[in-house]
Image (cartoon, rainbow, N blue to C red; front, side):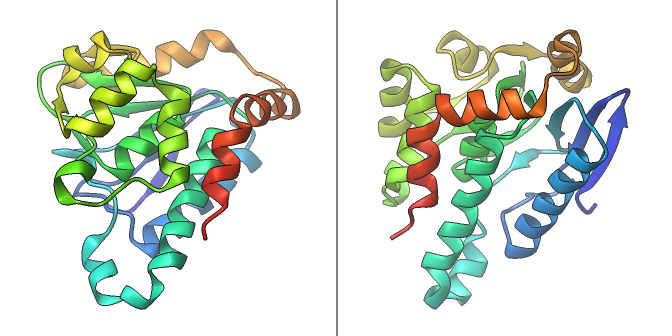
Length: 219
């Protein structure tokens, strides 16, 4: 299933797919295009969802292995999307119905709110165990969204957090049964109503100025 956009009233629902939904260059381009559409069509808020075992498995390691000479470009491309989500000029929520690993967990954190399935699926930063240090931008994003205690637990242990554990440490805002994850995310956003895009965009750019700048500065 390709990335697709639908609407629940004035809330855009961006569907990431039904497989591992890894961040291939094509995936990133399509994600950006759907964000363009959500904005141009006047969405008041945005929810991202996926179907199946994964919300997303993060970086496309197979593509990276085959295009090692483009690693810097690829990391910059991923981080540009993370920065865009972090400062998107509308309220956002990630409906995490399956596993969310690595860069996908960063994408979820770049949303304003997160809802995770209560009984299955893990939120995990495996970087410490696969010997891939966080870039300054990725670390800045995580630390902008989590308490110091939660950041240490998430970034340095490789721990796989289930829904209740993620909620207890403040990684996600709520948990729900499988068939209610998306609805719960929508219910968080719906009462917020329509925010002025210029104002909420400016607020987010100020709130997350350091993390956004670090994400955009790929050396």
